[in-house]
Length: 311
Image (tube, rainbow, N blue to C red; front, side):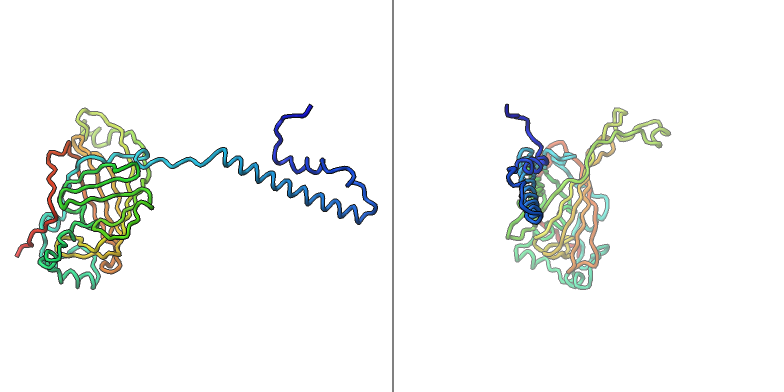
């Protein structure tokens, strides 16, 4: 009876040697025998190589490649909802339009200062470029509300009421390709880290006998994880409303981190790094804070507007 037991591919080469007809094992002289042995060994080697290759292909085909998990399902934190910017620093540059030439704390190089000193608000308005200050390099520093949703399983969408801007953060790089430059550019997103921490009571809370940030006196688990976004391909814009420039070749890198706050409030902080060799002597780094709102009752979309600077 013929055995149906499957054989190991690694043994098929030796089987090939054993199955060579015996008539080839007889030879008239030593040199002929040596040549025949070499031919048999070469043939057996090829059989072994082909057998192992077929087994490898069959194993890969059987196992298959696992499809990547969609970004929405893989999200370590939930950034969706309505958020309002909380401005507690840089008030004079964010809540108002600073005077021309006020670019304190921005690391402009000589060319950047030259361009900033030539800012002309009337010229921007005449050219229909009031949205220069609402581009990706400065939008998250503006006083505004943001609405974050999933456009699909691979694209996070950020809408702003001030300036009526829409940002699409693509987790698949190919989806971000477009020919036209826009105020918000082409953004490629990724998740970094992620997990849940169970917090212990802080030392100062033990001393004071209270839990300041959670009303019911518990320490709720903390979800953590960072949304990283890299944006290129934007139109040239302003870091501040008074014409402090960044070029169309700038690279804007952002890190979104969600965290808790007093009274159980939910916050996220976005750290923005603008790298622009044309106008900046070094990267311009800022951190902007947003607090979650319960609903859309305060959502008031308005077009791009820039107040007149104080005279």
